[in-house]
Image (cartoon, rainbow over all chains, first blue to last red; front, side):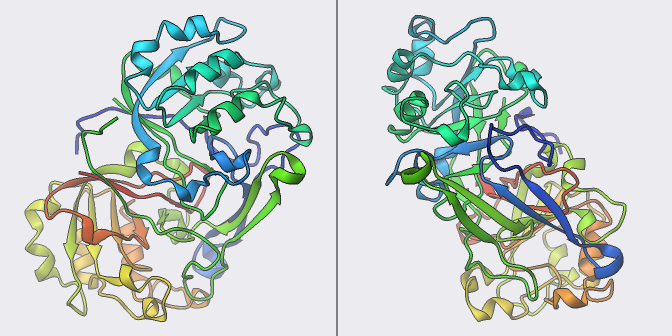
Length: 219
Length: 219
């Protein structure tokens, strides 16, 4: 049946070779039953919930804040705009202000850095453009559901062994406002200039700090 | 922002107490990093991909057929109807035929057996109404993307140690047509009588035989 909207898949494929945040544990997928021997195939996944394209919930970084299962499903869907940031070193407040009227209208702001093209290569670890703290604080004033990016993070990449409030400032600023962060998005080049519907429905794992997601745009 | 549609969450919450298909391995969720010690929380999930509300891909039962990652994202969204089956022992061809014109118009047919109310109780293991083989073969002639149910399965429940083509006939009949099966749905009582948009986007795990999903209706 023809659908009254166009759909764009915004998630990377997930396998054991997926690009990993430094010093984190990679996902494992093991076939524990197969059709020939057992009559059915069954794959067992062992993975941290921040594998591949995924969401951070506030409790990923901030104690006593919301987990994935604390939000209603409406948290994960809504109007969005994509902001091109490919040719800049950082995302400044003055640049974001040029999108102010549109940011005020949507639930999600998505940064298109071009890092999606570097997935599964060493260049993905280079620091992508991220909001300045001033820009992040300004964004945090809007009634947004979340912020997305086609890179590891809205903060410069650090080792997971060295996470502190000081080196992930934008996480703190945005998660404190109960925003979710959507990381490792792709296909952002296929999104329109105007407003579209974005969604990133997590698996509803109780008290989870995040979830891999099949993010999608409906246009 | 107000959305131009109503959303209904059709997935159970997933935790280590989730009701398990007989003789299958239950999911484990372990917090391997926490904010106090490591600066961030990280939960590691170990689970077969048929945990909680989930999809079966054809390769779950049939060798050399499609896995989750073989389908485009459009496979997992489309118009749907729900068919009430609460007060019958089996779902007969003659009953399904009363929905024929609507089945021909949609991508997904969802059986509401009432088993959703028995989730997390022993009664969930009782056999729910399932299509007769004759009814399943008739359904398989339609150009459907998938069949959903608020119970373990469209076949009577067996031990996972004893799966054969004979005791899962409806799986064979439907998966052979490249349909997906969506199992352990809930909140089907909240769906309208008419057509609505159903979606069940899987995590795009390469070559996976299934995926937990956050199924959703948009009305």
